[in-house]
Length: 118
Image (tube, rainbow, N blue to C red; front, top):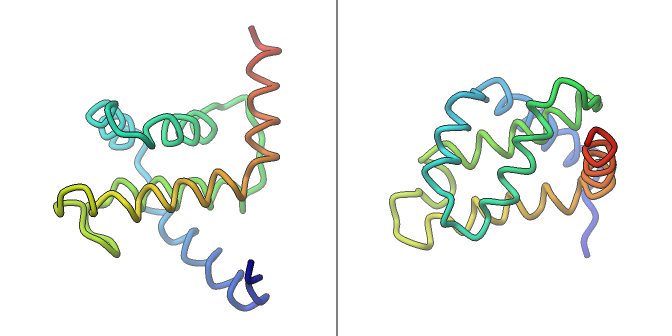
């Protein structure tokens, strides 16, 4: 696995923060309701729950990464436009998978907190 340089990481974080500015919780909720049949739906739903849960505390960088990933998925025009059947969702699924992998520790912490809340 190739590691990112410090500059590449900073650039990626800056891009995520810019995309996070476009994050709209209402639009994300509507989007998720329309796509319940997609294989990546549970990943999207998990990240959405993390970012909209007022009791779950996370760093601004983590919040920006999640918001950026969700905004990327919601936006119809991206690396592979979503209007292209099947293939259009591949980059969205890859962004979600990469975000899930990067945040595995935070996701575990979120799931533990949710179990304790029950």
